Image 1 (spheres, rainbow, N blue to C red):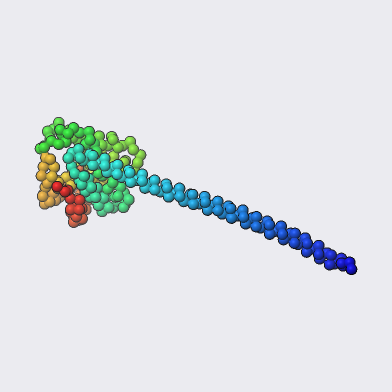
Image 2: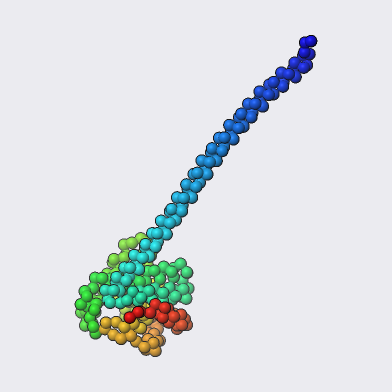
Length: 262
Ligand SMILES: [Fe+2]
Ligand SMILES: [Fe+2]
């Protein structure tokens, strides 16, 4: 018996439906394979990118650490020329950070001052040993030579574009300026002296007076405090002297923590 046209039609429809769905299944599975492949590629690219990020971050860290170490070492070289201890720069660094923070500078800037302040005397590398290590007081000519270490330090550092070295240049230049304008090398006064210079000045003198040097004994604390009171607004920024006395205990603690070992 011949199939009715209706059944034939349905058979045809079924066949073409099967063909179409077959093609669809193939298409979809091909599509899925492609997607899987591109997923894997994307994942690989993503992983690779992450790895590179991590590498860059590690390098950045390395560069920063190296910069800090170089700066600290340069500072120590400057100080060792004048027969000071490595701990002198550590103490000055810490005092400077504390003064900066209490003065109202940001945590980040205060941390930078801590790192840059050890370089204040880097210019001493150019001062003859005979003068640097002279026991007793300088005569006028010797003092003039000694004074050049501020300008020399500045000239050594001023060409850098690195923020930390720029800061170190300012500190080298201005750490012997006095609030009343009688310091060197420029004789600027008051808040015209950069805050970095004013901070390092007080940190450096506090530490220098309390330490024994080739030309002097360490001062008693009371004598240092008296000088600070007298020199408030003269040698030193009065705001910083006030901060020093307000937080005296923490300054003395740092001095004990980084005491020189003999
Ligand atoms: Fe100095
Ligand atoms: Fe110093």
